Image 1 (cartoon, rainbow, N blue to C red):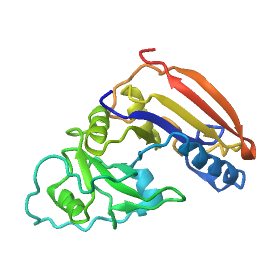
Image 2: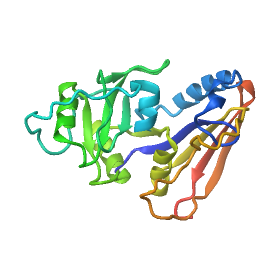
Image 3: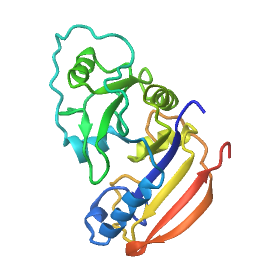
Image 4: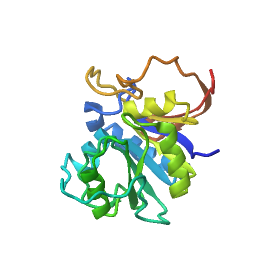
Amino acid sequence: MNRPYIVCHMLTALDGKITGPFMDSPAVVPVSEEYERTNETYHPQAWLCGRVTTDENFTFYEKPELDENAPPVPDGDYVAVNGATMHYVSVDPSGKIGWKSNMLHYADRPAAHVIEVLTEKASNAYRAFLRKRELSYIIAGKEHLDCALAAQKLKELFQIETLMVSGGGFINWSFLQAGLIDELSLVLAPVADGENATVTLFEKSSHLQQTPSVAFTLKSVDKLAGDGLWLRYLVKKGA
């Protein structure tokens, strides 16, 4: 296989939400710890999120310091760090995230080298900004993300054998509808908030054409601490 084994691993409320008021409930705390524990059972070399998730949780909407007069950078991908044991992959098609460092520290996970997934829309100034911070990037797509190409490059350039896709909903669905998700791993917290303006597990971007529903086969069910559930599904390919 010329791409990593890809698991969509998510913590959700019972009503399918992946963000919102439910995250502040005390009932989520023990299940969040179980979410991290179950993540490690896959031994991933990278985890991937979209721009909104990155901004909301890690960079806090910091703007990049761009030099519009930067000399032209070489075409193609840029591998800043070789041999990193963990990576954080940020899907940022146009190049908008203001990174301060090329390493991400989160919870008890190992420090992760940051890889930006850009499209050809990303400016020379933004690519120069990433190079100045020794942040790796790959180009996958012209106007919109090419998930298959991104997955292929992550394996070829960074030796990523297992990739965790961890939201948001648009990124999750983009990889799923492209036939790239091998396994769905859901950790359910025993809480719901009824919000109708927050993102659910899967959301279709407006630029994607209508696609058929995706079917799953149940692999296992485990009860977790804090009345959580761990549901594991395999994706029915071609179903």
